[in-house]
Length: 614
Image (cartoon, rainbow, N blue to C red):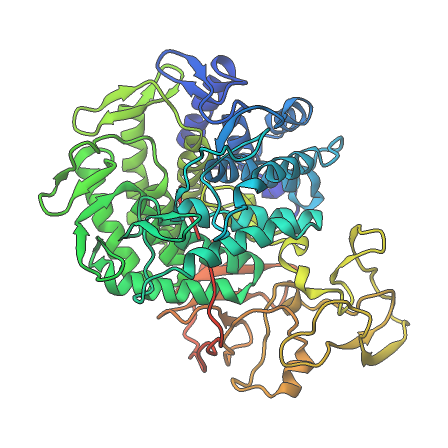
């Protein structure tokens, strides 16, 4: 399929109109301030004063195929955005909204394959990203490695800065910082965020639960309430997604341990409660709106059945009020006092999209229509969409968070576009994408997801002598064959092998790139392959998988159903990450696979780190 056809021909017109009503309102009445006041048609600087809503909206413009507005935004930001400002900002919010938005936009503006490349673009957003992340680094200078919650972009951490931060705030930075390290070649960004995850996980309870708030100096928990919602939510999310994006087994192991504990101690089917992290005693029987991301995460993990039940329960709250309040008391089944608002949160839309993607059950389209109707009739205001102050009275508040355009409308649009054919870059583009906790599109591109390949074969993603990154040249049919040990790499060999075996056609530095190596997978018919077979298949990309009799399926999770990855043998450039045993291919059709799983994930000998919030 050509690149041009990947730009959406047909999406849900109503959700598209919703986006432009809010985006145009922001550009006309608030830009370059951070956020829109949709009721009074004004603007406000709410985070750092760097055109936050524009940055957060960049990859939604890409998704809608709006080249004109995307090009304008990238050019304007490259010329005008600066971070050498005397402002104290949230490390978490700045990372997920600004850094994530810039990195995602850099990918689309610089990559020909996306169909959105800007000819005049010269990595301006990448340079801005590196500058911003460098200014955030002082926050990580703590005895535990867990960062302060806030940092001044010009002066670093203030001596009076609070030493208390949330688990999500300290553990939801790995994707953005990890990508930056891989794009710039500077490992410090990835290292500090991984150490932060390790710092949190090392202080888990004996039940493998983590609390909500921690002292970044002493490592003592200042709030021991464990849950999947406020202050903890995206910690779980980034554990799994860091594994999917980077192939780092440590994140997968921590996710598996943390997920098992959450399902054992926090799950009160179909709801989730908050418990003491040490005793598992229930301390708060509450559904809060941030929990609504959980069914979507379960879809990615392959645990579909509980996701379906929980989503149904969460949506029943939306149906009752027209929106989900920030807090819903499970003892009284009423809105929790002091938590009556709905600030246009996207989490329920996100889970609805993932469940429809996994099951193709039309009930999720009905769910989406109900949510659109509520937003249109209850939250729409003159210049955008308003916060709802009270879900019972539907009183509006003059504020619109940037994530309404980055996530809420994006997931609704993806839901309905998936139903009509999904000719969009996420479902049918040149790369698979991991969604950040802010809904930003992070590609599984070679320079991000294959850096551990280290040029051990032709076609791998290589660093040149001058530090530039490039692909090795294609081979000619008459090139010389060879079979020898590759000894020039400075990197440690793949575990279990003394050194990588290089076998194939020789030209330049790297031997040939097969389909399975490109995506970090190994296809072996024998469920118990010998070391010799591992060598033959050159599984140099570190990934914990099961070997399946079917040549086209690999299990990456040992949770009940398993997250399934299918490869189309007819197309060596495309792979579809799918969920559950019902496989959805790149053209939106259902295929049902009943392959018997032949082995489970091997136990990892060492424990370590991971995740974040929204």
